[in-house]
Length: 161
Image (cartoon, rainbow, N blue to C red):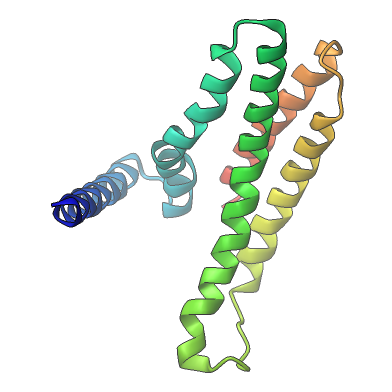
């Protein structure tokens, strides 16, 4: 019975992903924007919303002093850990899936322009986020400034597509 539920859940997830992807393609087409912008804004928001809620709940659900500090640490860890894990996992999965065609000693040559651009933006934003880890909580202006810079970087990076 558990296996049947797992298979049913997988089929529902795949059908939802297919419908979501097709709807985003049509939305981008109707709005006249490129696939890159559609994917980096609309698809990113839709697919990242569940994992984004983890740090939000961790930060806002804490009530006492120690719990608030712990909640902030969990939130920052989730915010920084998710993109790092996804970026390293993505590169590993690309290599893993092309290795049967090229062999383990074959070269993996991704399209260099997009890869350099995307990894460049990621490293700048990730470095800035890492710096934010060491800014004390009582220096609110610096923390707000770093947050605004990260949001600006996101929109500049997605519009450079």
